[in-house]
Length: 90
Image 1: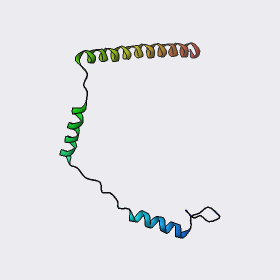
Image 2: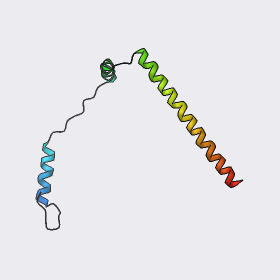
Image 3: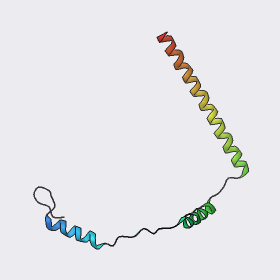
Image 4: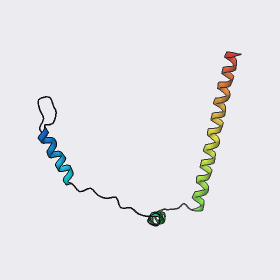
């Protein structure tokens, strides 16, 4: 791109860039209906590898144990902060 001494593009360069951008045909977005959307969903759902019953049970156990552990940690931190605030303020 041709630039002037101040670093700005010249008028002829801008015109060429605008003409080149206008020459490129714009792609129209293909509109699909609700039926096409659900066909795509159905195709994608066929590709999913679902867990077995045993895997599902073990994943569920991991999630429940993790939730319980975080609940205990948050309870302990909350109790500690509350005790510290009571010791300082009251």
